[in-house]
Image 1 (cartoon, helix red, strand yellow):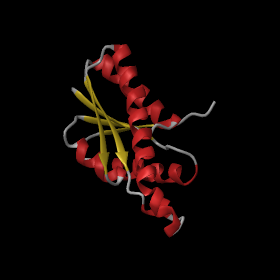
Image 2 (tube, rainbow, N blue to C red):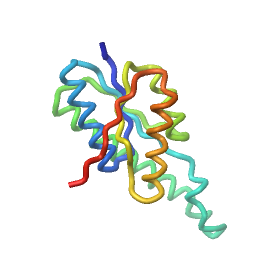
Image 3 (cartoon, rainbow, N blue to C red):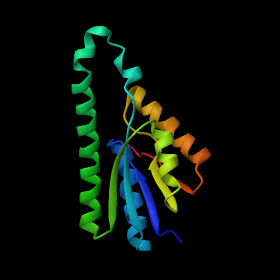
Image 4 (cartoon, rainbow, N blue to C red):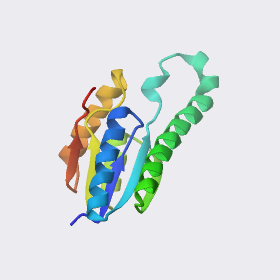
Length: 146
């Protein structure tokens, strides 16, 4: 059975829906959860030109804070349910980070799409890539808009 569940998030509404579903499953199975936020390289986001370079470190720190905030929301949900958990903010391409971490767990639960716009498309492709290449079972949670 599933004793350890990996719950990746990017802080988006759709990703948090995946987290909530994963937590419900963990509660029913009395499983431990591991939250994961992948801090992606900035390459494509820095199309602003050389004048943006002085702000690079500030941008990296803002993105790190976003990740920590997403993990904080997730861990609060786990605490409310009395679940054992761990949380990690790791640097790298989201799919690769998730796939590497998946090896340590019995199941991966994630939302099918994340942030809107280009980031949403990227997370959609991340979900597909994780489902295709994961060494462990993957539960994809669709985002239902109200």
